[in-house]
Length: 84
Image (cartoon, rainbow, N blue to C red; front, side, top):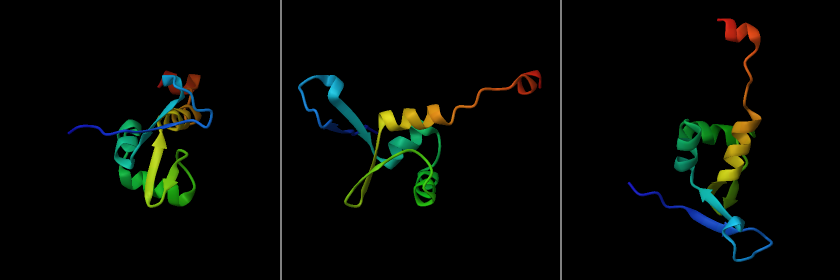
């Protein structure tokens, strides 16, 4: 199964690749976060989870927002957890 990705340019559009933002659908985002599409939908409903864009009925996630979400939810183990 091929992966189709939606790209858009940031508001300060230039011709460099650095300005491209990779936009992923729910399934692709769920795969990156190792969760279900159902979980992604529930998080949206509860106002939790990664930032997203709604384009009409479509929901898209930027790769950068998924990484930011993972970074924000990263837990450093305490010494008590390491000793287990």
